[in-house]
Image 1 (cartoon, helix red, strand yellow):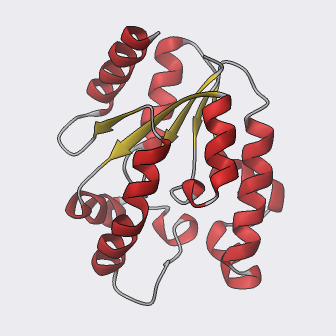
Image 2 (image 1 turned 90 degrees about the vertical axis):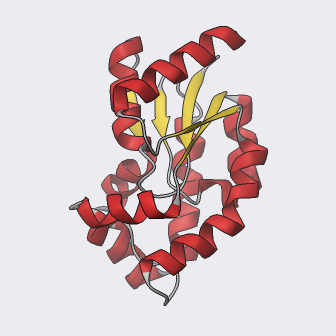
Length: 174
């Protein structure tokens, strides 16, 4: 296994779990959204408002292509990374894909508590967060399902429990 890719909707734990998992297995951690904002020198919200979602998705594609060239990394991806079939193919060829899942209620609760939501999680639709989350999950869940090697429901688990479940499942499947 080259890398571990964490996929899933916003606020399902990809970054926090990714950092903790990387520490536990002693691999470096990368966050694709952080890499995009670093390279473009602006927040995702600013990028989307200034250049649009297509521009962001193009930058996401470029960044993921670079990250797939790494070896033995834990990589947290953006929630929409699975919208591009080439991204999915690249991840499948370069590591294990773990889908971190959460109920819409959990996502909304976490988004409201997260200080970076405004800068890093621009609205995807003109609807409220909860309705947007429900609709977007309905579209994306089949894509996450098709891309994943396995999934972990993060609703009622803390970061350490999620990491233990990932490690246990990964090592069983190797």
